[in-house]
Amino acid sequence: MSVGSAPDFAVEIHDLTHVFDDPAAGGDVTALRDITLHVSEGEFVSLLGPSGCGKSTILNLIAGFLLPTRGVVKVQGKAVIGPGPDRGVCFQEAALFPWLCILDNVLFGPRAQKRDVSPEQAVDLLQRLGLAAFRAHYPHQLSGGMKQRAAIARLLINDPPILLMDEPFAALDALTRLQVQDHLLNIHEEFRRTVVFVTHDIDEAVYTSDRIVMMSARPGRIVDEIIVDEPRPRRREFITSAHFIDYKKAALSMLSHEA
Ligand SMILES: Nc1ncnc2c1ncn2[C@@H]1O[C@H](COP(=O)(O)OP(=O)(O)O)[C@@H](O)[C@H]1O
Ligand SMILES: [Mg+2]
Image (cartoon, rainbow, N blue to C red):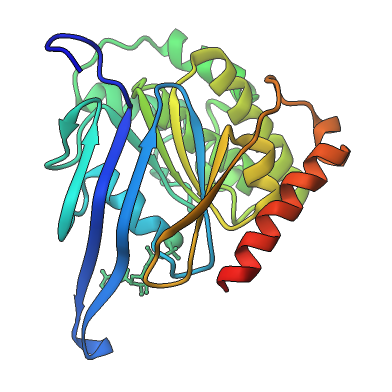
C-alpha cells in the first residue's frame, strides 16, 4: 500500500491468537488460534461456528474492547488500540434506555458527542426501519423486533463505516427475524457499510452475506469460507432456490466435519 492511499481492507486480522486467563477453568483458555481474516470495504461478512468458538471474541477484538494476546487487528489500515467511532457495535439484546422515547434513544449518541444530527434525520432513519410511527413510544411499548430495529437506528445514526453485529437477531421469532434481516439488508444496500456479522444460524448467514467465514470449535480457528455469489438486493425467493440449498449444504458439511 502506498503512503496516503486508501487502506486495502476495512478490517485486517493477522496471525491472531487470543488467550483468556480464566482461573475458574484452571488457567489459560485459548479462545482463538492463528486467525487471519481480511474484510473489504463494503463487504458483508458473517462469522459462523458453534457456540464458544470465539465469534464474540473476534468482534470484541475488532471493536477494541479486547486487545489480542498475539497478532494484529487493523481497522482501515490502523492498528486497533481501543474502541472508536469508526466502529459501531450491536449485541443480541437491544441496548436502549428505558426512560427515553425511541427518538431520544436514537439521538442520545449524537447529543452526547455534540454531533450535529437533526431530529428530522433521526425520524428519516426510523422511517427506513419502519419505526417512524413509534418515535414517541418507550422501549417497553415495543415488540422485540421493533426494539432491535431501534437499536440498529441508534447504531446507524452515528454513521460508522464499520458495523459489528453480534447475533443481533438471535432473540427474535422466525418471522420477525426475516423482516429485520431485510431492513438491515436494505440499509446495507443503500449505504454499503462494512458489516461483520456473528451468527450461528446458517440460513441467516447465507441470506445476508457476501462471504461466510466458517470457524471450528475451541480453540477457534478459521477452517474455510463460502463466497455467496448472489446478486443484491437479495430477494426472499433466494431462500427457496437450489443455489441457497447448495450454500447451506456446503456450510453444514464444513460445520459437521469440525464439530
Ligand atoms: N472474559 C473471558 N474470560 C475467560 N474466558 C472467556 C472470556 N470470554 C470468552 N471466554 C471463552 O472463550 C471462548 C470463546 O468465547 P466466545 O467468543 O464468547 O464464543 P462464541 O461467541 O463463539 O460463542 C469460550 O470458551 C469462552 O468460554
Ligand atoms: Mg458469542
